[in-house]
Every structure is written in structure tokens, then in C-alpha cells.
Length: 543
Image 1 (cartoon, rainbow, N blue to C red):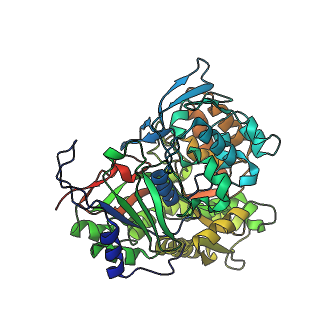
Image 2: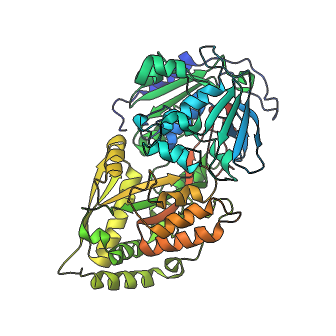
Image 3: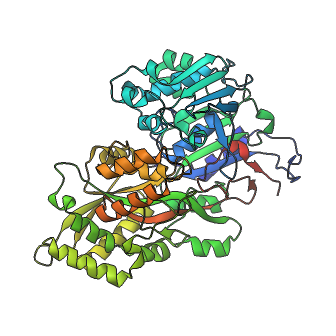
């Protein structure tokens, strides 16, 4: 996802002015604020997304695009609570195994055809179907949708999935076990509908601007890979009268410093992130526009525990030593400095209902951690005469590079480890990490819903995003039983302790969403720890 061709400042500004639709001056009906005449929103992201097809999307920024172009059963409000989307309401059976969603009859596809319950059935079956090769197919199984596991394993046909349209506006979902957070799970883009009549007619090209049909608040009007993606307000969206932003432009700028420069020039309303270590200075200079809020994400390093990976990776003493020698306080305070939190557990403390367990490493001083790390490495047979050599793989980004440099220096100084670094463009990196072509790889996971299982399920042996290929029968057992428990906190605590002991991953920090946001843009969901945003919730105020 490296940027190949950047727009010049003049061209970018011209595009915004030429394509922007002027709105009549007025005031916001809820806040009373004076609205800007031109309601356009331009934001920067570091990388291009591998896909914006709801059945194939897997990255955070791609999901933001999908939430504009499509709408699922449920949305989130600015605090992260589930609210009606295409579904106006739902009923739950007494045994909590059947959810019946009632769809709004006014929901339309952008080609003027009605959105039907069968579109959801088609979309969900398409995700579960192994032929689709959806990177999020496992999410259907995670939701406990009946038949999902068998379909994904190739043991049953997609039409056996526990989802049915009893009529055009009634969708019935059957679960294998009760999930109290199931309504939150259907705010996820993987569960969004797709237009069967277009997908079947156009094939893989259905998501191109010239073929695009969606049911969201926006339609896709332009997509230049590695450069920009433009979406315009839809005339067929059921709630179009409450949509203020008329055009949204995503620019791919894979240099945080360049993105900041363009924000300062007024060409960009929001940056994806900030240059490493600059939040303090930017906050002083732009106190109302430099933003840092907790975000439900964890930054971590994967070990590769596959058969055939280097022998040292399978030595738990080495994995523990490498984790202990990472001085997380230096990383969050000196390298990043934008409100991130040192992580010793995989699940962030901001997760609803989750109490962070006291794992041993978190109670030690860094000096104590280093001493133990040195003893473990010596016990494993590594030292000055036999230094461990390894490679850290990350996707191209100055922030990832800065962290990798800091970690490699810590390992060198404390343990004598000789670490090299490799970086790849986003799509290539995802493929390498997914197929195990790495020794240590960076990763970041953001909660798909606000419950601890969205993180800990990555430790399950069958998880689609268990990139380390960690396999622990006790963890699998605890995760399975947690799904039917009224209070699974004891299971989650035990899993965190197992992960802390086995160390298949190195949790480094829990995120803060740190970015620059134009003061004129209002409605950003700062109180939603998932940072799930919709352009239709935004508006611009007059200067």
C-alpha cells in the first residue's frame, strides 16, 4: 500500500472544490451550529486497502470505507452502542439461539432495487464459502452461526448456513450457542449485505466504480489504486436527509510527515496517525486539533511457531526472554509519546467488562525483567559466543520502523541478539505474515466488537488471524466454554496467564488513536473506544 503518485496541492484542492456539492447555509438541527456551505471531508491513510468488498475486507481503514458504502443490520452510535441499521429491531428466542431481524422496507440499493433479507443470506453464505477465500470466514464461526464451522471446513454446502429469509424483510439467524454480545457482532463489515444481482453479473469487477452498487449512505465514484478513493452522498439511502457530508475523499499518503504537512496546508481534514514522537509538540501548537483518545487495539509481535520455523522460536525460554527485554515504557513514552499504554496482556484494559490480570512481568521492574531475560537466554544456550540472530518483519511505515529499531537495540544491549529488519508494502506483508514467511512479524489487532473474546479468540488454534500458529488445547477449551458462560472473566484471566507463560506473541502497547482533525469537522466518535466512524455522522461547521 505504498503511495505511487501523490496529488499536488493544487490538484487536490481543485478536485475537492470541483466535486464538492454546496449545501444551503443553515444550522445543525440538533446542535444549532452554523453549517459550512461546502460539506466535503478529505482524510489521509498510510496504505491502500487490499479490498473494499464486504466479504473480503480485512483492514481497519478498508472497513471504514465499507461502512460508508454499505450498511449492515446494526450500526454503532458515537459511543459505540449498537443502534438500528437496515434492521429496525430484532427478537430473540427464549433459548437465545434464534435472532429474528426485521428489515426496514425503505432500504434501497443505489440502483434503486430494494434491499432484501435474501441479500444478507447471500452475503453470509458467500463469506462462509471456502471458494470465496474470505480472510474473515472464521468470523461466521466466531458468531456461532449454525453450520458455519462445517461449511468453512468444506464438509457442508453454503446453503446449510443457519441464516434464512422468511420474507423480503425478515432475516432469521440460528446460533449453536447463546452469545450475549451477538447484536454487537453484526455491526461488523463482514456481516454486511452485498447485491446478489450485481455480484453474480459482474464477478470480481462488481466493486469497481463503474459497476458499483451499495446500500450505504455513499456510493463509490472514483478509485485510483495507491492514490485516492472518492465516495459521494447516495440519493437512495433511506436516511439521506440526515447526511451532511456530500463527498468523502480518502488519499493514500504513506509518509506520516507528508500527511501532516498536507493537513497543515489545509488539503486534508484528518490524518490517520501522527509522525512518531511529535504528539506533544503538535498538541501544544494545535491544542484543539491534535487528538489522542484510547483505542481498542493492541500492537504486538508474532513469533512463528509453525513446523519448519527456526528452532529457537520453539524454545519458550527464548520467547520469554525476548518479551521481557522489551522496555515498553521507553516505547510508549519516548518513541511514541501519544497516550499509548504499555501492554503485558493481549487484551486492553479499555475492553468492556475486562479486568486486566496481574501477569508476573507487569509487576517487575525493567531491571528485573532484563536480569531474568539474560538468565533465560543463557539457559537456552545463547550468549556472546553464540548470539541469536533473527529478523523483524513489518509493513512500510516510519512508526513501525522506529519501534523495530528500538526493540532491536534493546535486544542487542540486553541479550546480545543480532536483529535485522525487513519491511514490505502492506498487501505483500499481509501475504507473508499469513503464510508464515517470517521469523518475527509486527501486528496490530483492533476489536471487532467490545468484548474480550475479540482479542483472545486470536489465540485459538483455528483462528484465521492466529498468525503465530499458537496451538494450546487448554486455551481452545477455555474459549469454547467462555461463550456459554454468564461471566467468562475467570476463563479470560486464565488465557492471559497462559499466553504470558507460553509467549506466542509479545504484547507491546495498547493503542491510542492519535491524529490531526480539522476543527471544522464535528461528530467524530471520540468516546467510542473502537473508533468506529461513519462519514454520515460527520458535518462541517462554518468558520
